[in-house]
Image: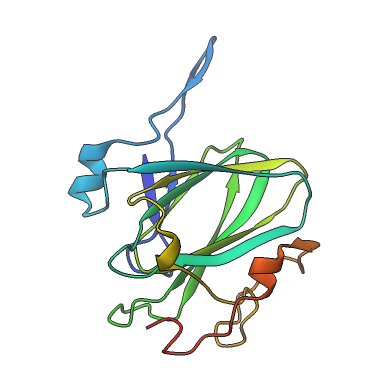
Length: 180
């Protein structure tokens, strides 16, 4: 696995090292020992999928408040998505910065997002799907969201969303009280 740092402290794009022969390809996509050596979460407590039939579907920006902060390892299993992490950790050197990774099923790359970061994505192709590995279970009372186009962060989305759910459209702008 090749770990590429992003603009977010502790967040990485992870590329598998593909081995190829006449049968096809093989690659390791996760190794607890390697993640642990890097100080990353290496235990996943919940896995989720997100299917998105329409290009331009936007979901986000979501996270769980402490003490239920969650690390995420996100991968496109079908199609392509523009995946974004936003650092909401006040003591982080990248606080209030964002990073984006284009996840592509053909590249089999992943985005590791540390706890304390909001997450969202925009589908770049019809019929895109994501697989999430989560370090903590979902706790409804800890769920938080911020507006995807909050000017406080100026996330550079590749295009405006064509479809956004009512919950995500109603997320508030950033304040220290919303995202301490």
